[in-house]
Length: 570
Figure 1 (cartoon, helix red, strand yellow):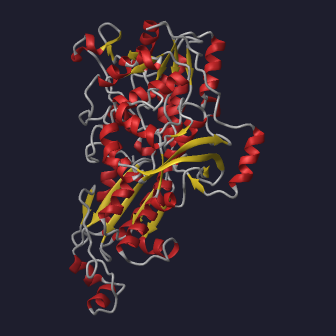
Figure 2: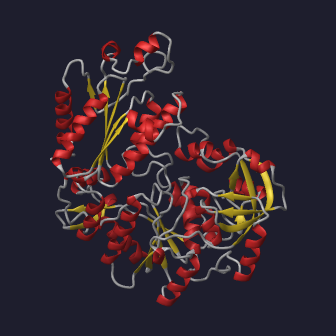
Figure 3: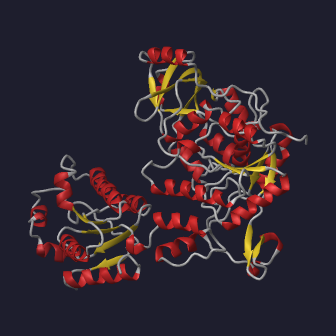
């Protein structure tokens, strides 16, 4: 392959129109139908407008879409492996026709672009899944699951005129556009640039791996991690970027450039790797690092990889002549203690190499244990400790679920007193009756509304947990669906301890201070859990307590022993 140089991309700097034209488009948009984009669509639009998706000038029309699925090519022959389409529901699609214009807004309704429609069609999602992901089974691949559940059934294609890029308030100096990167590389005199795509925390082994790739190619480094799909309130997003900023401090000066890209990843394996390479070519890279498991949805997990190892590297390398960007294989490294240096894992037996897995790192952070300097840099570890304090300093939620009269509220109140006595974290009690009165008074006792009530409690508890407090929740919460949703949400921010108060129904009926069971048995009220409505017991609670066999004080003591064992309290 000929020696590629950076800064040779020939395209307009963006699809953002001149201010005079933007003013005209804003005036016209008042009379146009409009669409508020979701986070995934916003990321795609931003990459279209700033030309990260060059040569695309808008969302794919039907012919380009079908060509991409079949041949990984646009109709003009350009390599493009992943469909970028604007999905809408059937009702909205039926209100439009080719040649019409629509406004594309952010989630607050601010105009970002005008789309001139070329095509409207119902997607064959099964065919798309088979072509892009290699399977149409959502159980096998999370990308397929998202395609079937989150992506709407109708697609709109057409060119876009940008009024403005989506507005970001965080790390603005790192959100470089392709044009800005090309200019910087030119100013730096960088003729060869190695792009490195990541979404992980980076440590000493990553530095050695990237430096080895730079030496092999004679190039400088463009560290370009993916951000942007999480809620802006997700602290881990900020931690990731701060850690990248600390990480680049350990490279020679004028050798590395850090930028962040708000990309909606598809996890399409080899196609994904090729897509990432094309994007980095637009950012001015001449080379791109590709892992053996690049783009695999299960990379870095304990689940078997979906795509064959090395297939992504082979695809990117095979098309280097056509794409203009060369593939550099990522070669994993580990610390050889006897030699006192990092070595390629492929060159030494596993037993001679030290490493710390992501899971072990998290456990060490949670327990406040030492992170050795051979594994990570002290300034990176300091950033991690700020965001991932030991469990004794984290927020957590205690979620008690059980029948009315089982003792949930009593235990929650005793817990609150005990936690208040400790005075190390703010405590909030979210009792079922209190929440019903103040947060969910308009809801009925249907299954849908019961689940909605529980997830509302979960949202409030997640905010308390995220901010380092203790949330005590004591609703009946009769359905597993909403309880699992709360576990997934709250566990992102801190501890989640589910406690099943498994007091038998007959004991609850004997207590019946509210008279609910008596009225339900007499047919005077409906929707009483345990009588006319079911209670689905939790499948895997952390603690099970039967208050017919222990006092509230004994139950609380059992909970405290568990919390101490898990490190949540000292």
